[in-house]
Amino acid sequence: MTKETFTRKVFQGDIPIWIIFMLLCSLSLVEVFSATSTLAYNEANIWTPIARHAMHLTIGFFCVLGLTRMPTRLFPIGGSALMVLAIILLAAVPFVGISVNDASRWIRLFGIQFQPSEIGKLACVVYVAFVLSKINVRMTEKTGFYWIIGGVGIVCFLILLYNLSTAVLLGLVCLLMMFVGNISLIRIGRMMLVLLLLLVALLGVAKIAPETTHRVLPRLETWSNRLTEHLDDRASDNDLVKDDNPHVITDDNYQVSHAKIAIARGGLFGKMPGRSVQRDFLPLAYSDFIFAIIIEELGLVGGTVVLLLYIMLLIRVGIIARRCNRLFQKYLVIGCGLMIVIQALTNMAVAVNLMPVTGQPLPLISRGGTSTVLTCVYFGLILSVSRFGAGMGEEDVAEEEEAEEEKEESVEVVS
Image (cartoon, rainbow, N blue to C red; front, side, top):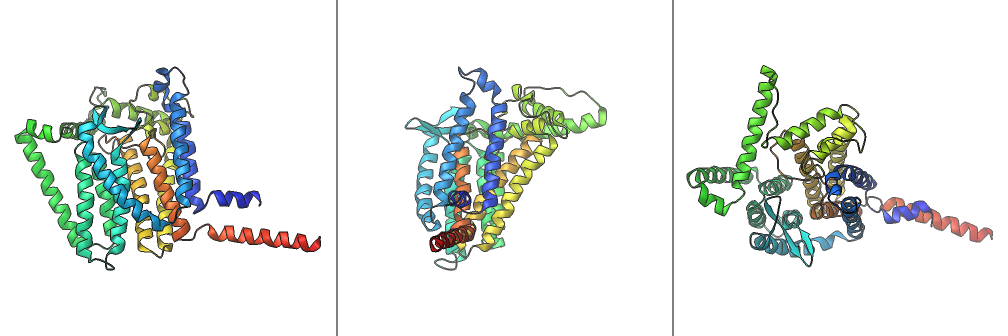
């Protein structure tokens, strides 16, 4: 077996997806090592933060290898079990959740701390893909729509109690999957209208009875403050342009201000990896605002390359989906791609102050345990579909094996 054949046997599936995956992992190791300087100061061993991140990436890499070899027909069964588990874990968060950074989003089981919302996102993507694939086969379009609203609605509501941005992100991805799955635009429009009315009613109740609302939705005040701060900050930026007044950094705009400073320092080509200054001032520089550190160290060119990697991922996902014959595989790969790319765009928009602070990490680049491993799982699902659903990568392996066999036979004949 040649070295090329061995490599193709290990990295099965769509090669461009593998390249994007490996590039993002490599960039993650470099930038997280640079951005975790504040964490390293508090550790007895300065290598502890990056070693922990590398361990999560390694676990995720083996998850990708395992899923790439798993036929896609097994995913609906696993998705159903994962959906039930996610609902149970999400329902338990308000009672046994661990508070980190003033938010109870984590659960600890058997010594492992993780975010159930990440499991809920993955479960919903598989669930929606499965239901969409059964429309006009085992159920009507109307029935399938209500099945999706019921399952996704429960998960989104449970996440909404403590993490609005994740609930909105998940709802948006599932909405786009329904649009791709030919769900009636009238049904989707009615659902969005109902959600809008519910949001207006919630805001009205919050104004009338803020204490009661805070007991039910403890994060409501935080969401409202972040939106207000974002609008005020954008207004102050316009005032600075008009009046040429100095910008004052306060506790309210501290994160956004230092993110802007990092981006401004980056210029076209950046200060080079490891030379960031704002990593020591910017809270969560290794997670929520790592894109600002990337621009400071790699410049506008580096930030554009990162953006293009995610765009190329979405393009490849579209190509894979078009080559799939089965509807479940088609919807699954689209859902996984949308989840990764929309979350990435959200993180980037926050870093450049186009959106309020949401707390969404940059997929596969930001430091994190559950998020990193689950993002690798999305890549594993995409590669599995590319292999078993679209047949990508299998032709090259077959040709190489056939050529190797012919070579061995010719050697035997000569001998």
